[in-house]
Length: 265
Image 1 (cartoon, one colour):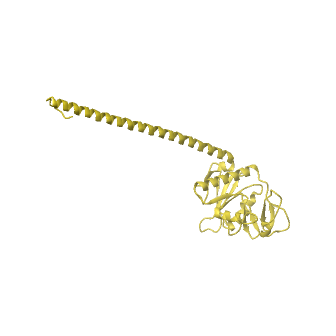
Image 2: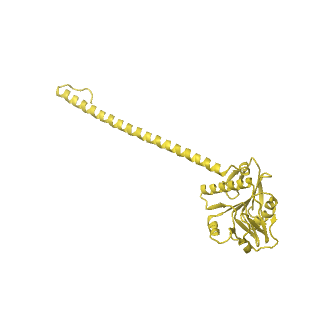
Image 3: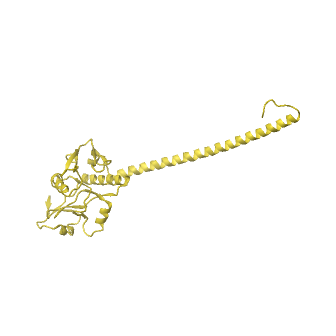
């Protein structure tokens, strides 16, 4: 924890605080705290989780958003900046329409927050857990690539505080609120680049598009074959009719000659 000033700020002063460019600040009981510069793996994990959450919400048609660098007010003069925040689209649009910093106030509660541990990892496990629990955030993930594990905190029904479940490498982590949101712990702790995932999906879409084109071509060929078969059937029917007509003419000629037919034509 790096406290940048001995002068304490109110929450309202924090909202309008202009610090060093490119630096994010949290507020803890009036103390302004400079957040450390994230490592490369920290950034990769956050990008991967945001991508997976957004993909899940879009696929399941859920009106939710996954955002980063958005603060959450946790006490009278405290505000944290989780690495990932999940909230409703309507709430996010409401926050975007407000002047000043993007901060969710007490009545603007997120559904889920994620912290990826860094050098101040004890804050994530102890202090921030207590703060997020206090304001009733339903679900809190601690992604710890150093120890390596993922801890999912949630409040069981009729309980007054968080309990947690830990997911280790080789296992799959599952959201408490979104039961179908399941990820490989290994992949979360050491994720591929989001750009690589997007390219892979684009390639799959292209392959599906090519398969669809081939299926359409096959359907056209089948339709052409059906048309040819129908034409052949018409020709056969016309031939049968012509043969019957010739047979009837021959039978009539034979009757005219006094020859009786033993079978009906």
